[in-house]
Image (cartoon, rainbow, N blue to C red; front, top):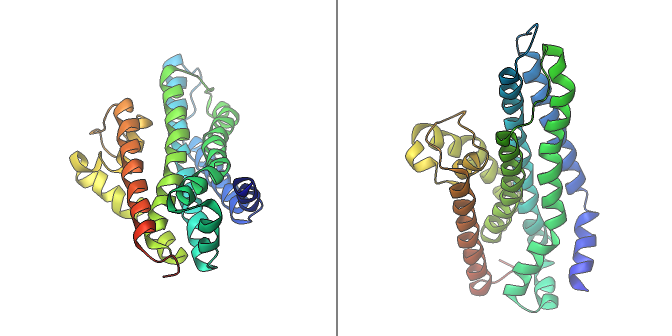
Amino acid sequence: MIIRAEIYRFLRNGALPALLIIAIGLNALAVFGTSTQLPHVPVATAATNEARTIELLHLGFGASLFSIIFGALSVTRDFGTRVVGRVRLLTGGSGRLLLSRAIVVAPGMLSFGVLGPGTVILVAWIALPSSGSSLAWSADATTIVAGTAVSTVFAGYLGQFVAWQTRRSLLTVIGLVAWTVVLETYAITLLPLIGRFLPGGLAQAMMIDTSTTTEVLDAPAGYLGYGIWLVVLGALAYWRLRRSDLVK
């Protein structure tokens, strides 16, 4: 009953649709803008169509930034309103609170994971003919879309688990955005042998994205590595919940 009530509370929260609209809009703009820069070809070959399709599909990662923000807000808002103590009491303890919150936000996380790459596919299909090309599906395209979807969902849970540590909305969102957009990007670019083991580097492996570095792991290693990050962060979140006062 408590999980059903919590799901309803989060689905009607204004943050989710707002973040989804922004994520979808920016993904669409990124794909459309990039497609307008593609040189027109009189007769596109199969290789050209496939290469351009893959180039545009790689732009679907943008939704992960908003997924990570949603994941963080799904925790920090309850600390800000001091509702978290009551929710833990109703769920029956710290472990159940952690698990129930992960379940509660699953529909939202999946929305980012589906609509993010889905928007890219749709806009690419519409925009590519203007450059003389067309959407061409391939095994790599499937890997990219699947990796984008899963890494976007994973990013949301990463934001959630980090938020159990920080507990403050503004601090957490600023920190996660700065890490994702600036610090992690520099680490992946300048120290690729280390950066490829960070969540962002592992997401690139899942999407076979070599745009910033060629030192990426194989896609299966990306899934495994990101999963390990989530397990470790989840364990730390559980430890924090057990060891600290929820109202501090």
